[in-house]
Every structure is written in C-alpha cells, then in structure tokens.
Image 1 (cartoon, rainbow over the protein chains, first blue to last red):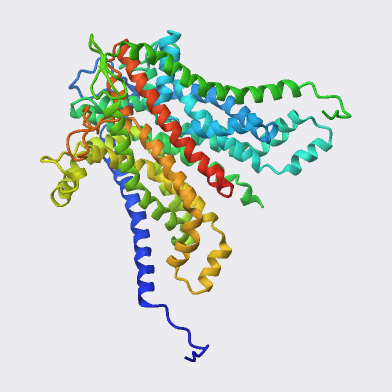
Image 2 (cartoon, each protein chain N blue to C red):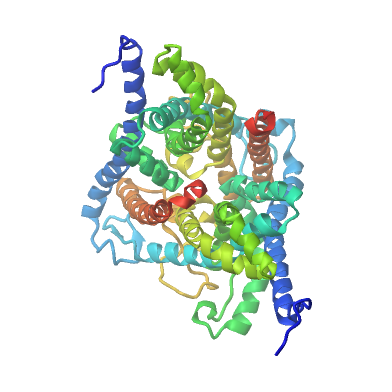
Length: 295
Length: 313
C-alpha cells in the first residue's frame, strides 16, 4: 500500500504509443497537404516552360488555326491587367472608407454591426454568383454588353470585402494614444484619420490590397460571364469582349489539341508567377515594415 | 448631443458622410445581388414547363424549356460533403502540426507553404485536375471499387477517372488551406496555462492536446469547416471540366455521373439562349441562398463565441 514518493511511475507503454502514433499522423497530414502543392507547381513549371517564350508574351491568338502551334496570350495578359486595375480602382476607395467607418465612426452602432456581418458573409459569395449578378445587372438589364469593365465590376465585388477586412484589422492596430494626442492638439477627427491613422497603418493596408489583388487575378468564373472570350487584342476595357489570363487558360484547356494544352500550361505558368510575385511582395512589405520588428 | 467648445471642422461632415455611404453601398450591393438574380430568373422560371425544384433534366434552351435544380443541387451537396470529409481531418492535422508539433522556427514558414495552396488560382487546379488527376485517379478508384464496392458510394460496374470523386478531391485540396488556417489560429489561442498545467501533471503531448486544445478549439474548427463547405459549393472553374456533367441523381461517385450548380453555369453559359441564361441565373440564385445560409451559420458560431473573434478570417 505504501508508495515511495521518490519513485515516479514511468508513462505506460500504451500512452506513449498513442502519443507517438498521433505525432506520426500529424506529420503525415502535413506531408499529404504539401504533395498536391508540389505536384501542381512541378507540372506547371515543367509543362509551362515549353511555350513560355517571347512569342507567347507578345502575340495574341488572332489568325491562329485550331491545330496551329504558336500564338500567345498578349491579349489575355493585357486584359487581366486592365480588368484587375479597374477592379482595384473601384474596390479600394469603397473598401477603405467602409473600414474607416467601421473602426472610427461606427463603434457599437447597429448599422456598423450589420455592415460588419454582411462583409463577412460577402467574403463567402461564390465568384460565379458575383459574375451572374453583373451579367444580370450590367449586361442584361442595363444592356451595356460584355466588356472588360463589366468583368472589373464583378471582380470588385469579390475584392471589396477582403479589402475592408484587412484594412479594418490594420486600423485597429493603430494605438489610441496617437488619436488622442492629435485631438489634444485640436486636430479635427477626419484630419486625424487622414493624416495620422491612415499613414500609420499604410504598409499594412497596402499588403492587404496586394493580397486581395492576387486573389482576384486568378478568378475565372466571373470573367467568363461578363468579359466573354476573344482571340484578338482589345485595348479598350469599356467596349466589346476582352480576354483575361485565367479565361485564356480555361479556353485553351477546353480545346482538344496538344498545341492548345501547351498554351494553357504556359498561361498557367504566367498566371502563377504573377500571383505568387504579388503574394511574395506583399509578405515582404509586411515583414519589412511590421510594427513588431521596430519595437 | 454634447456640444464641443470648438467649432466643428468643415471637412468632418462630408468625410463622415462618405465613410458611412461606402458602408451602406456594401449593404446595397448585397441586396442588389439578390434582387437582380430574382429579376432575371423569374421570366425563365415562368417559361419552364416542369417543376424547377424537383426536375432533374436541364434543357432550358429547347423550344419547350424543361429544367430543374434537383440533380445539380444533389451533386453540389454530395461533392462538397465528400470534399469536407477528406479535408477536415487533414486540415486539423496540419493545424496541429503548425501550432504544436513543428519546430518553432519553422512553423511560420510551413504555415506560409500551406497558405500558398490557397494562392494557386482555381483555373490552374482545373488544368492540373484534367491533365494529371483524372488519369491518376483511375488507380485509387479501381481499388475502392474492388475492395469497398459493397459500400453504395463506391459501387458500380465501371470505374472512371472523370468522376464525382475526382472533383471532390480537387475541392478538398482547395478548401484545405482555409480550414487549416482558421483551425491553426484557434489552436494557438488555447490557454497556455492549461496546456502547461496538463503537461506538468504528466500528460503526454497528445493527452494535453486532446484534453485542453481540442475542446477549446472545437467551435472554431466547426465554423472553419462550414466556411470550407461554402467555398466548395461555390467553386466553379476547377471542377467544371472534371465533373462528368450529366443530369442524374446517382450516389455512385466512381461512375460517369455528377455535376454541380456552379460547374453547370460555366459549361452551359456559352450556348445559352435568353431563357437558358435565365435558367442558369435561377440556379445561381439557389447556390447563392445555400452558400449564404452556410456562411451565416458559420459566422454566427464564430460570433457567439467571442473568444474566437481573432480567428475570423
């Protein structure tokens, strides 16, 4: 019955075994999750390099026959830059102002709470539904036709909630002492926000915007329904169908020829490079100017 | 209202008005999405000669349009749930790995690697799925059919790579990062004191996780899974060319049957007549409502447990 206090019973074999098994499973889960990433990137790089040449980056698909090799994605790259650029121009002001309202003016109000809730819900809207909405509203009801701008509108619906969320997070990080010091000097609230709060949170906001851009740059479904598809260069985003890089990949992979599949892979490589570089740049900015590093 | 001793700045009113206006604009957009989808869906629904909610066939472009959501909604729900079943255990494992198992110095980088999975555009997953995964899945599918064919899900005489299962695998890969990221955040927030206390009492690492991390994280993981479910249901381009695109209700996920609302929109849009477009918009409205309900439920779970507010993605 007496148990010497100096002897600690070793952990039973069963418990140690269970511990080890779970550890193994957790490592396995991580490895399983990384396999598809490696597979995707490996195949995109390997297959994409075959057609990733100057012709691909400087030519469109105009006058390229169904079985012809050659041709490129210049029209698609141009379209993507214009559409994403316009979407950024639309969604950044709206997103910034909404975030400012939520953090600086809304606190505790019913309106702010419902906006906050619906921003969260809006992040979950399937991209294809955003496309259908612009199709119904812009193309069908207003009768303004397919265009790069319609695509930009659809993309901006997907971008706005992400911009609001990331900006809001950054604004909340700005210490209240800065605001109070500014008020104490007699600076009105709106000027405090514009001159003190926004510059303090600036790099964080830029990071959030870049991540949002990277996210929508790869969206295909909304473009399919609003920009339509063309093989020619269309520099004007406001009239007529355009092309986008994701759309180009989707269009080419649906064609039954190896030459088209090669172009699809090259397009995928271009798109991944674009998205990953944006991602990387955003992270570097975030790391470089992170407030935690300075203190 | 309290009056300030100072004169109100002239810029204050317009600035405040602009910020409030932007917020209200967002609400208006949400409402407009619902309104315009309904407006364009109604004419097509009126032209429909069958019952929209129970009909399986999808021929809205015919002179006598017949179309319904039944088969599409079934495929959407089944494929998303399959994806969820595959993704959640792995995502929890990944989250635990990064929060409690990985070497401290590597954890940040490894978390970033998982986030990269989410950065790959869906059309690239689609291309990868069509060229690589469809042929690759022939093997595992045959295995499932041979040894687990007695389960109705894996039954059937012929096995195809281009199947509902392959689409679900792609969906699982795509929703894994979001579930893992949110779960990781929640697991990291588990109270350190309790973790250390259970270790001090002699618990093994797994016992500590089972008794103090997992119970704490459960609501967060559940809402993360629901957000993932919503995303899987709305995913379009990655699976548009992987689903066999038929209009049957068939539980055998290895057969050449299966489709989803979103995939059907992408595939059917090109040759749609005005009635056909309206029919697709009507199906999009159904998708919008389903994902709205799933997302709101997930958000409510997060909101109810305020401690987890930091985990909201």
